[in-house]
Length: 527
Image (cartoon, rainbow, N blue to C red; front, side, top):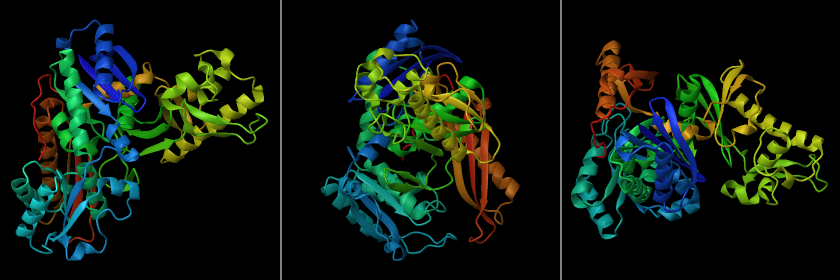
């Protein structure tokens, strides 16, 4: 059996699954110390399912902790930044354009050093090894443990970043080192930003992953722990501790994978309605569509793989603001929300705040709480607010579509009652069983995955041979990550010709997924 857990800002959801069957599920409040909430949620599903800890083959956890830390500007490390780009790359200093509060929290020490490559792979300037040694010693004496290393065009040739990392590790053995080519694509500034954010999350990542491990140990579960990442696949706990930014989009992704699994629909738009927001994403062949543009996390642009998500300020706890006469004319829905305080503040629960949940019950679209607590709103007012909420959802679905044809819509999340049974632009609205915990189901059924992303030259090696070699590499990585060999499936081959490079160059991305082996081969991907 498997356990899937999704740790959100409001709730920690857990499911116990036996194959494709949900045996037990629970929603528990998220706790400040992370671990006790996870422990409580897992112990609840073990008890409800009457299952012993020894029957668990693996545990998968998705978490929004790292996203929240960046958005809230809290619990971040000081970072030493080594940029290998001089003399060419000194026009824009690192962290240019970052929100002031976030930049001040990270309080980086920056070194602009010679190095990097031209777009065709030629060296811009040789690596200055003594300068890197000196920088590493300074960072060690300043007590800065998190280091981000970025070189120009490192995805084309990672040699300089790897050599610099080896030198820093030699001089500063306690350092946690992030090399940018392990995270981002060609765009230099966005890739450097991703490396800096990853480094800043270092000690928090170690703390969170350790808390998850301690919770399992306390419960007597000896099964391996996996963390779900942005593309809906799993990585080992050690890899997540080293590269936490790879997991910051995993919440919506888990919901989308769970929705696909629970409905059997592989191509659809998913509406994941929470307490504060509705996250919309597109399922293509059962996996979330990736964003093709640089993504903004906490005000910082990054360019590694993230799901293409539209966050709408409408959730179960969204406040409804009426005009003074209580009419819908000056009405405003959200984006502020009572969040996890809904059971104290919503009128259904004896509070004095009018929320989207109150309107849903008043409109006869949901049944919970005490309807006697609702205000005496005219039916026209209730209908007006409900219609306005539906219009918000319909407009959002329209924004996510890539053609004018109607699409299948999957409604999941604790607030899925806000999605009606028919929506303009939707062929049908599907509300699966266990919709409220689709995120935890998505974590539980996740597969291991691998992504090979390389710039290649078809003059040096024929295209057919190159693509086959990269497919083999992706398959081998998926198996090494704990996948069953005969279940490996290539789910994406993306090829972009780079006209500005000589030698018929192309950037090729090959993605593979595989089912998790019962006794996985534990490979530590951390550098």
